[in-house]
Each structure stands twice: as structure tokens, then as C-alpha cells.
Image 1 (cartoon, rainbow, N blue to C red):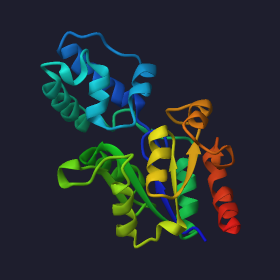
Image 2 (cartoon, one colour; image 1 turned 45 degrees about the horizontal axis):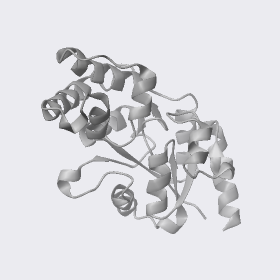
Image 3 (tube, rainbow, N blue to C red; image 1 turned 120 degrees about the horizontal axis):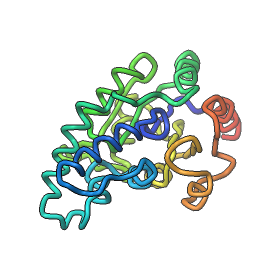
Image 4 (cartoon, rainbow, N blue to C red; image 1 turned 120 degrees about the vertical axis):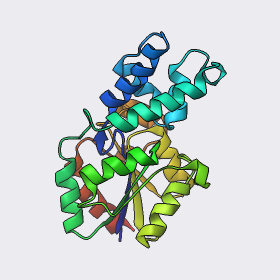
Length: 224
């Protein structure tokens, strides 16, 4: 029986796209570079701040100012990550219901740990027990490596055999496979249904609305 849920953050629980776009474009303007649309940033996210800036700036990591731009982005985003972010419609009701039902829950995100903790405290602490952000300097590799999930499961004292992973991107599908654990893909985030299917998502484990998660968990539990 499933008793633990590991959630991705951006594009799954929280719509952070406008704040991410604003912080990237702040850096672009400071360096006199072309700004990006929200749709462009949507296609760049999923692999952490370093990869986001690599994709956003001309020449990527080969740009002489890359490290300075990454630092500027991190600092700006840490100050502005709450400006426009908001939980997706139905997410808070879902988390409240899951909490009431006794599920153990954690968030794992490639977003910098400082920002993850900040957003976790503001929106999710009442219902979700743990939140793990990017901390490769401490030896915890970012997704799709399974490290963050292992850390979250250990903090929850949960067994991966009774846990599922919920996310909105190809990175999340890969992360779940690397643990390995069952992956449930959501279609309201940063990737389309077609992109998720192409990345290996299972259509029978795909949901279009948050309220569809709990019935799916019950069905998965019965199928074990």
C-alpha cells in the first residue's frame, strides 16, 4: 500500500514560471543581452539554475561572464521567488486531503535549496513534512540522479517500495526510473502530454487535474 509521495516543485505544485523568467531577464538586461519569453524559459527549466542560465545566455558555459550571470540570477531569484509564484489550482486542497489521509510527503527540486526552503515554508509546511533543494556542494546530486529522493525517503523513514514520485517533466520521469519507483506525470505544468509520453510517461499514470491523484494512488495500491 502506498504511504509516501515525493513531489517535484516547479510545474507540479507551484507555478514559478513568471518569477524565473523575470530573474533570467533581469540578468539579460544587466548584460545587454536579448530577453526571453515565458515559453522559452519554460523549455529551459527542469535541470537546475546552472543549466537554466547555460541555456539562456549566448555561448552557455562558454560565455566569459557565465559564472557571474549565474550568481546574479541566484541572488535575484532568492529575493524575488515569491513575487508571482502560486500553487496550481486544486493543489492546496489536494495536499490537505493527502495529509488528512495520513500520507507522508516530501518535495524534491533542482531549484537552489535556499529558494526551495523559502517557498516550502510559505506554502507547504502545514501539509508536507520535508523539502530538499539543489545542494551538489554537499554531495547530493541534482535530478535526474536519485540522491534527493533517497534523502527525502530517509528523512521520512519511508520505503521506496511504498512510495510514488509525482512530477511534470522528462527529468522527473528519469529521476523516478533511477530510484526506481512509480512515476505519476501531471499535465498542468511545464511540459505537454505529448512531450511527457515521448519521454516515457505511462498514459495510465498521467493526471490532468490535482483531484485525480488520490483515486489513482488508491488504484495503484490495490494493484500491488
